[in-house]
Image 1 (tube, rainbow, N blue to C red):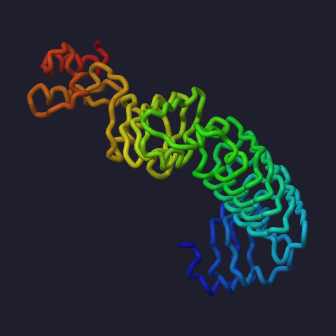
Image 2 (image 1 turned 180 degrees about the vertical axis):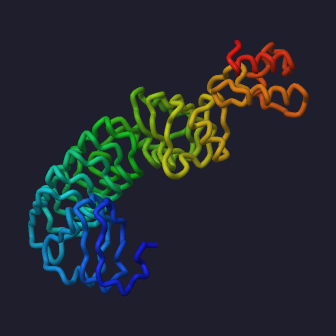
Image 3 (image 1 turned 90 degrees about the vertical axis):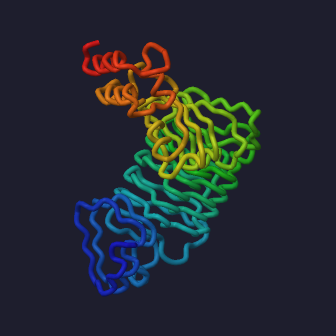
Length: 368
């Protein structure tokens, strides 16, 4: 629901100078608005922010709100080239959506945000030079730009969202910097670059996009050292998936990255996407790691990659709680799983006994 969804009688909106973002359809229901003041502080604006009657009152051509390029109003002439004026901070979501006559757009270095689907279906747009200060390519920004042949992603970009360049049928010259670890699903699907790739693992920059072709349990999958991310949806359609080891360089595992996986995760601080990375999984990782918590929070099987003596609760630390848990096991108030038992059973006789509890406690308080 939008904040002003039922404010149908508002005639004037004046936004405070501290506001930096205006989300999709924020004022789309305010059909009596005749005055809208957007401060220069706004850097991001979603699609469909303005009510239709307000747009109708504006002259044809480029529409600016504060320091934002909001949209192009009216019919666009054949072979139009747009120069965004200097000082503009952002391009709103859907700003040029469906304008088939746009062949070129020049954006100043002041632009730091380009919203979702800003250039979707601009079928004659031939190239995209992106300002160096942007840090994210939003969902669908250039999808269905069928004449787009090249794009250079600036060095400061850390994320490319889903379908950002999907169906760019002529796109075969792509530069993706090593700063990027997060890529959404189908970001480069059905581009000329992707379609001409051989079968096998698909990388772009330091991110695995997926596997082109079929995978079975005999397929060898080796993720290169230095790889930073597994894209959203990378292997989700690959059901017969083999065991896989993710090197310590992996920082991000995307939503729906795997259908099922028996996966070893070596980075103890790996991050996950907004939605589940696995339909089902057995995760092998260090005690105390983010992937251990992820597995346990989501009902996946977790196996410790390494064990630390005295770490009875398998959180990667030796604490008083480890001694307490070991004591409960020693007096038969608790049954430990096989991994906790291995950590607490210091003499290897298959049981936890009071002398071992004492040793764990001494280690926890720094006496050993």
